[in-house]
Length: 270
Image 1: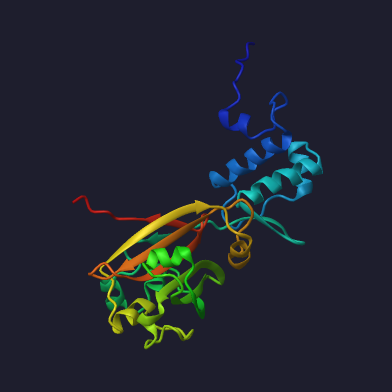
Image 2: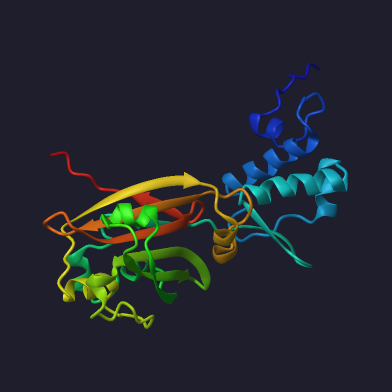
């Protein structure tokens, strides 16, 4: 009887550690686990096999397994909890709708700040903000964005946005102090209708925005505040608001972890 030789499937070849693969074994194991995460075999929130099980399944040493898991942690794909094991991170990102953020019509319709409205539209209702305020002298960057002369003071309203009990975004708004002294903005108390509405109420209405986006690795302080795992970059979005006469009235600096957001822009082809 003749037996037909069956070529191993592409899936099976890529789901085992190859003896003649020149890459280190831990890189191969990281590739296998990464692929299982991406195809949904290990879905968000699921627990990875124990180190012992991985050693037995892939005939690898504990050192190899730990190095592979370290690669995945550095990529932000998994998180490890002391005494519990490693879990696939829930990576359902928030769609950051840049056109909606700051939209007057959306703000008036919802009666709430634009970030909360944007997140709630995506089915998330557990949100809050930690707010602090400070008056300081504008540094060179902020002075340039706001078109200020040297040594002029600004109000900075600092926020940490929380989504599902997780620190999700840093948002710092800078205003020329003379614009907001008679407003509620210097008070760190929450403004339910939003800071943009308060700025309008004291006579400074944004007519257009200019965004500047930088992708970089987070600073240590940003990683600590936002609980960003190793290997995850951030987007630094600087939005400057201009009144109809081209006077800058606010610069809003946002720090968005790269594994938690998708930036959406809708640009008209005029």
